[in-house]
Length: 420
Ligand SMILES: Cc1cc2nc3c(=O)[nH]c(=O)nc-3n(C[C@H](O)[C@H](O)[C@H](O)COP(=O)(O)OP(=O)(O)OC[C@H]3O[C@@H](n4cnc5c(N)ncnc54)[C@H](O)[C@@H]3O)c2cc1C
Image (cartoon, rainbow, N blue to C red; front, side, top):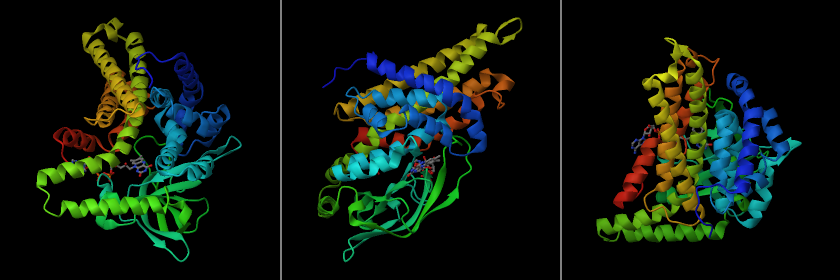
């Protein structure tokens, strides 16, 4: 097991500096244009692919960094460049992680390369879980997957929403209910291969922020996928469903309420652990946006003069910058702790993953708002990047679980209550 250290290794520093160069030279200069166009920045993704930043190899290297700091360092630098473009670059990773976490070796080897394509023919992937009536309440999912035994095919029907890269992806990973009675324990994930009939893009959303990232509905109308597209395979699913049914039956057979709740808490926590592990990555994205806005505000405060002196000479401005920097560093530490814990197999006893996402995302919202204020009228215009960063930061308290849901997860974990 790797030793914990707050000092990134030489390799990590090298990757960080390399990514920072890409973020500063390629991403940041393109940010305003793609924000205005509200389109996927294909040329930037292609450039990232040429450099090896948009690739399975790069993502896997960071993901398997034994210290856990590979992903947070990479996310912070890319999102420092621009959140919308960075999400277009890392969005495929969300779907890839879905396959890595649940797929067989064969599925991982078959589908993940098709999610990325190659530098000459770049592809994207989408992870489709949310639905119009099932956002925070994932268990309310209505998309159904029914097994057609005669053909060894799964038939998917339903409407997904808010899918990053939805409809423009080569490979879609779709979460569907195979047993609605079991709530989220009855869910399974499926690969929908490129060109599958019945999958179409619904409306594409016009958004407040991260506008360079494509977000759309995905409609599944009698989509048929081979049995081999069930992630993890049917035997594993059947065994998991049998266990869940057994637990549900035991819960209804006179187990005292507190015991029952603890038992379910434990079961649910196993599923929540997957989400918990991905949340620090979103926290790192938020740290990147917050740091970017803070740096612009700091430079501005040093150079903008009013009343015959730089505005940073006023304690009212300097203290804001002190608070901004303190919060950003605290957020990064929470993110690094959670990532280190997840990678080194330490159990999240107090929902540390949710803590990191909650604090970092709220920090990004607060810091970017302060940056707008410090830039005065200029902060309110699109001539300066803090206006865009402020709009972008609003996403972090919404996706991958809202701040309210993070608080709910933390509170229920502390109380030993079921997370639902
Ligand atoms: C730009 C963008 C990209 C996204 N990308 C993806 C993606 O790639 N794949 C995907 O599957 N999903 C994606 N999402 C969906 C995202 O995860 C959901 O929007 C999020 O989970 C919230 O769900 P909701 O929008 O339905 O809000 P709701 O669940 O309707 O929540 C509305 C409000 O009620 C609050 N609330 C709900 N329940 C409770 C409660 N029990 N206690 C207290 N407050 C509560 C929420 O915190 C929120 O403030 C994306 C969303 C956006 C906006």
